[in-house]
Length: 446
Image (cartoon, rainbow, N blue to C red; front, side):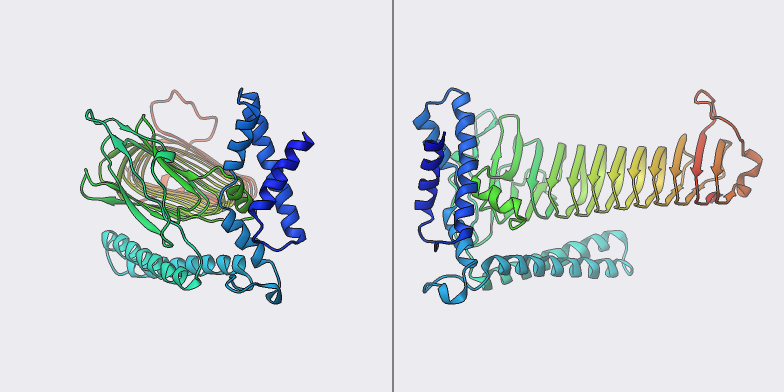
């Protein structure tokens, strides 16, 4: 075992010869050697011959030029060789990313301000224009940095019968020093599966047969289409990529423009980026997960929407048969014709507007607010310390069980229909359960 690890260490050190000797380099070599050794053991267990397993593991090291540049960026200014990058290239990278995010946020806020003066359609256009301008500004900043930004060239095979096939390793990746946009034939592509560490933006092209456009810094990403018709975008499983990802120094933003037609499913997973899905999307299953980023989705129709985030806010606008969200501290906002809604949050607020058929919301300290233009068939809303506010139309009877330990309960607008006791799920009339421990509970009508 020690001999193989030493071979990995020696091989990695040789590839990093362009970096000055330092404790950081020694630690990096040791970490990468352990990573590749684990891959080596996995391949041995799968029946691969030892020498082949070693060569394949070394081939999965990844971008050594980037690793070398990272190590050189940690050296003092006087220790630099001519032609090396600035005093803190990694810090510059993070600074540029922060600047780009700040510009994007400013543009988004400007778009939101403009939305106060325009209708909803113009509002979405304003936000999209702002974000496009932010991306252009960010690309300009990247160009000034002098850092090598690689793009991706994607080639996909389409058989005579329309079957899409191909693998990422067959696509002929190439870098040009800039972020790139590539068109991918959309025929036969039914689902999207995106995994990254940065922001994800998905736009719609009015042409239902338009190619899919993938844009972003793809130097550490794979893009491929499976035989099942799934367009996949995800990080390359290289040792160097993992090295940067674990340190939060790798943040890849991805932008996709897809044809405006019905999609079977769209799945997005990102570590800390925002997710923005615009236009009037038609999709069967929409699944979005992010740790700290915000989620903003607009759909024309969706059979099932699933959202999960730790501290980011979740916003869904449109028609969804089923919608569920789970957050720790993020707020949840659903607006539009909603079928069955399920929300669970620790400290975030929940707001349901438009119309809802069945709603189940549980919160620890967040407020719960429901405004439905139609009379819901069922509601179970509870918050430990937050307020629970409901507003429904006066167009039929219902039964309600409302309670608060230390807060006030106000059912006066519907006093003639108020009812106290355990709810009967088999009762023919709609039944609502509204409860809080220390917050106020109110039921109002339009």
